[in-house]
Structures are given as C-alpha cells and as structure tokens.
Length: 479
Image (cartoon, rainbow, N blue to C red; front, side, top):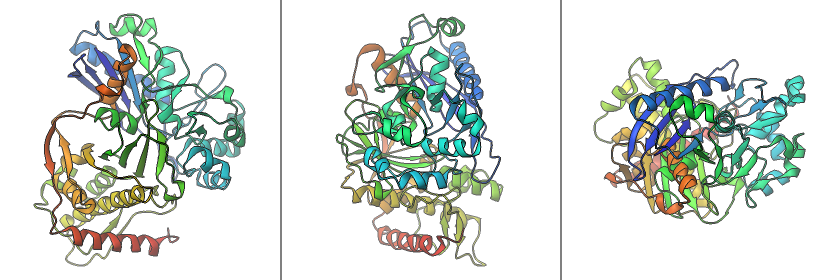
C-alpha cells in the first residue's frame, strides 16, 4: 500500500492506494487561514501536523496500514515557513496567496538574473520576496532564520527528521535555477540568504527519507516506510491525472485556477506571466497559467448571495451565450497574464434586470475568461494542448466545464468518479520511490465522459472575452 498526503489551503487530504493504484481509503482534516491585514494570508504550521495526525489516524481506523511501503507528499506552493536553529517555527507561514510583498517582488524582478535563471517573473506570492519583506519589516525574526521550508517540506521534516525539498515546489521560490534543477547561490545572496539555509533537493519520485519509528508505531505502519520527494500541488495533481508528457494538460477549478501543460523541455517565457517549473518527475518540466480565484470566486459569491454554490450552478440550465454583466475574478490580485497584485474584482454592466442567476453565470464566465487568458498565454510560448482533463471541485459543474470547453474550443475529459488530484498523485510518487517505478505508472484515469464545445456559442464567448480584456485595461490602476 502507498499513502498520499496533500496539504491544501483549506484542508489536508490523505488517500491510501494498493499496488494496483486502487483507492482503498480517504480522509480529510480542515485547516484555517488567517487574514490579519489587506492582502495577507497566513497559516500556523502546527495545524498541518495536527491535521496530518488526524488523517493518518482516520486511515488506520478504516484499513490496517501494515502493508504501507511508501508515502508521497503534495502541498500548496510558495509558502515561507521560517525555522530557527533548533527547527522551531519563528512566525506563521506566509501563504501562496499573500500579496504583501508586491514591492519586494517588483524589486527582485527588476534584477535580470531572476528571470534569466528561474524562467519566471518574481510574483508577489513567491517565496523569495516574502523573505525580503520579513527582513525589512520583521528584522529580528529574519536574523534568526536558520532554515526556510515550503509547507509540505515542513510536514516532511516532522515525518522524517529530514530537511528536503523537491524540484517542482522549489521552482516556485525564485531561488531555483530551473534549467539546472539546483539552488542558485547568486539568487539566494540577492535576498540575504545562503544555500546552508535551504533544504537538500531531490526529484519528486526519489526517496527523501524514512518515516520516523515513533510515528510508524503510532499509526500502525511498519518501520522503514520511505517518504518520496513528492510534488507541488499542481505537479502532483498532474501525476495523478497522467499529465506527464508534452501535449497533455489539465484545467483545475479549485480554490485557484490552473491550466497546466506538461513539457519534455525547458521553454521559459517569463514576460507572458506563464509559470515554467520543473515537473515532479526527472527531466520533465511544465508550464502553468495560474489565476488566484476560481472556485474561490464562486464560493465568495455564494456567501454573498446566501446560497450554496452547488445550488447556484445547478439551476443554470443549458449553456448560454455570455450575458451583458461581466465579472472580473481578481479578488486578491492576479497572476497570469497580468502579474498584478493590486487589481481587485468587479461586477460590471449590472442593470435592473440582473438577478442572482445572471450574476452566478457572470462569475463562472469571468473565471472562464481568466482561463482563456491562461490558454492564450501558453499558446504564445508555443505550447499546444492536445488532451485536456478537468479536475477540482468546480469540475462538478457541467455548465462551467462546457463554458471553458467552448471558450478554448477544446473538448474536456471528465474522469470517472474518484479523486485523481494532489493526494492521489502523491501516493503514486510514494509508489515510485518505494518500488523504483517511473512515469509509466502515471497513466491517465478512465474517462467518464467528454464535454464538447458548443460551437454555436464559440464566437459569443470570444467576443465576451475581448470585452473582459478591455475591462481589465480600463480598471487597471483604479483599485
């Protein structure tokens, strides 16, 4: 058996699979985010450990874990977990969707070495500018930083006692030479750090350490269980849905939105605001267009409308051409293609006839237009998508998936019932680390059905997307 642990923003999920990759058990534990100021987003690392213990106890209550041989890790990227010389946490982790370091990010991005070596813009959510912010605003804490870990790698430290990161997550720090798959001493020095403060690097399918005996005993696992390098949440999800070779892609409608395409070569184009990162498998890279609010935007509107999100989407009927109302889903800024931490969301062109259903459609359409932005940005780098799978909670809405299919003019595959996200991909990486297997086991899931574009509405979605782009340009600088 093999376990995948996926540390998400709102919860930690675990899956248990057998050697045929069938899911035997699942468990989740909720997590809370603290937003103490405008643009801030933090989490207590101790809550991750409590959540991990809870899900492991839950798995053990469902199935005997005596046959477990490997554990894989997945997690939200870019978080700055700061430890002192005794590995004590110095402050809450600054999360991926925290934009307080926008000024510092712009300063680092102005140094041409960062784009040249990382292949990416230095986004406000990335790890390096967070450390510069801490150095400026919390200098006493910065002076005590002995180790910087990404969120899932702090969980690994607790599981194994080893300070290790892997390539896909490390690529989102702005400290990794993404072509060489190694830390850049020059980029670290530019932020007042050294390699000694960074974890050791491994590939996602490699062994990073062994589960501590005390935890193995607590959860009923054998001693000597290996812990794989794992992957950042999107790279691990890609392993889970078999997106591991050029032409394969997935669209994720989770808290954030992602259009992820695998690549067998390093082909950066930082100016497009496309993310070019290492994949969780050796000698493989990927490109991502990332939007900061996808299902998060729908959940926000559901809260405002005082209706469950599922109710809002279930009542929409067949796909319609986009209406006059426009929604810009920039609730916390945006990455691809704008790299704009200051922009905020907006409803436009509301009138007396606008009701909650029209506004719900506008929210789905706004996120759809943002995914179209990502697709266009990827296409501008030469990336071509031949197979697209939808994952994430938002993919349960046929209306939403067909809107995206129509906007991109691409059929979208929906997997059979089951979770093929980060936890499942992490379990596959745990299997690889334990057995020596490779990318060949990262097969595509069985497809329940295809959602085809509505070709009668393709032109209407393109026209609405053009209005959406013009609206961003008009509003930029007014937030």
